[in-house]
Length: 167
Image (cartoon, rainbow, N blue to C red; front, side, top):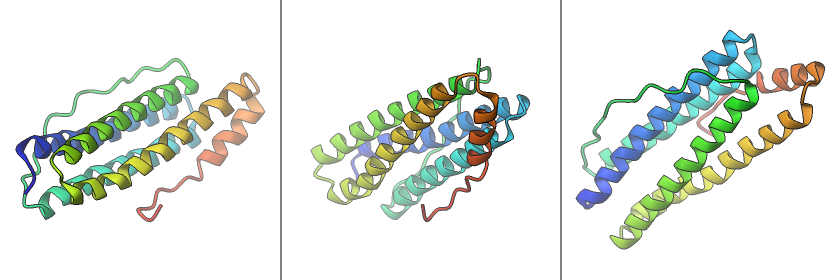
């Protein structure tokens, strides 16, 4: 049985995942407003992925006979100075999520909660990919600078992204 502390931390992270989805939708809205439909799609797909992550934790709590508890989702940042700003905000968000999962893993380790450690390993691996992806996009956008043609092509490429739970 999960400890009260670990259950509370998993619930907190579940809500953080849904809050991240909310934040990515705000980034999508900014991009759509600026007529960057490809970048908007990227963030819409990122939001779907975060909802999947939140649901994964929800299901784990239920599987462990714990009560998944939902909390209020704070309003996300809605104003950005550029597309680059959205990606930098996304990276900072993912870095915080990584720290959260490290803390969860430490709690699970201290509780000798081996099935939870196994469950969390999937998320830890996922966070390596998430941070690397955002860093790559930031590097590309910085390299593009003011090249409107390159930005257009890059946006079109990101517009093809389609989240699948099998990723």
